[in-house]
Length: 427
Image 1 (cartoon, rainbow, N blue to C red):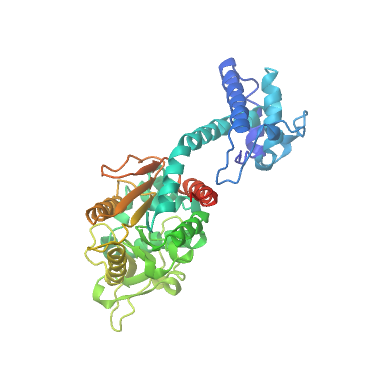
Image 2: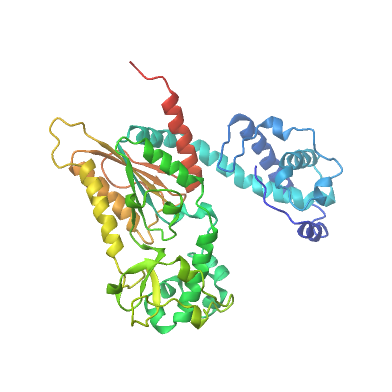
């Protein structure tokens, strides 16, 4: 189990006040550690963290009974020794003072890990069902929301806590995500608008598309008729991950393009060489005036803006989006022809990932596509991947919900798809 860092300073500060555990806490920790040993010994836990542990790992005779682990700056690489030390101490009903913070940390992380193991175990049949849908699909539509990008390490600034953590100066002024992602901000406070967007662009640029994107590409390539990507994400990760740009719809636009903030007829252009020059104050987020991108049209001195569909946006240039939609529609028409005399009925897998209900663009598209497929006589199944908002669509047909994060679910799906492929075929 991957333990997070437990800094030495934190442990030493805690050791002075955590002299003893009270009996309920000790009992809970003991139960937690023992449950972890049983689960890990009987259930092969293969998560996206690359961890596969069994009871032998927990029983490794590598622990230092003198508690040398407290000298380490982190415990991630010393998990088996730490767990053995923890179990030994807990079984004895007491802990050495210097190890208490480490044991407490191990216990809390184990509680969370046990939940993950149980969730994965409970999801096994659903993962198998979803994998079968993908194996049998003639075409795969990948419909991605913000949840797909979380595993790439992008900060969460949509929640109230995340917003205050990332943008304290804006939170102090009672400014919200909706008020910042608004074209009016470029009219009223262009320096603040561009400083905020530059902060986001910098983080998107530094982040790397996670392995789940490669899994998606491999899954789509398996389908007889191929597939298409429909995403509301503006990070451009699908293109960076190697997907064919002509097989992608970015329904909310992308950071990788700019447009004029006043005149949408002035077209769109690549953003990288313009946005990379923006300088801004890290506290106030105000951008330096002479680094703010301008419209590239000769004679126009208006501020440029990202080619992103914002809230209450009447100036969004949708020329690129229209081209993407035209290719998407043509693909669907080829997969779902209106007449199919004597043709095999195609099966469509709609892989919806990390799409919530707060901004339901992706969910609506998935369900509308499923209805269209059914009306054309095709078989359409939605695979909904979302750790929280995972209720099944109220539509005819076989649909599967996986209460997992995007990366966990995709790695599990690919492993199960491989099992289907290796299984002996009936004559």
